[in-house]
Length: 99
Image (cartoon, rainbow, N blue to C red; front, top):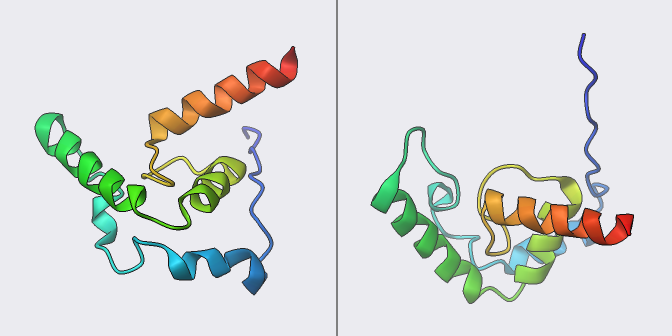
């Protein structure tokens, strides 16, 4: 049986999650932030650009991004960054801390 990597998730305390109440995406269609199967090319780029526009005006963008980075969120756009962009941020952080 393969070893499972446990992810750290913030504790389920209301104060830890209150930031979500002020999120600009709160009333948006969630599919804007998560790509459907086999989405490619212009459709994907347009969807991501639209999601990032919502994030750009969000008052809790930094908290959202920090949550996604801390919890290891692997899917979707969080805090204005895609999966690949967050992976690059995590790798850069690991390189800095390993020096």
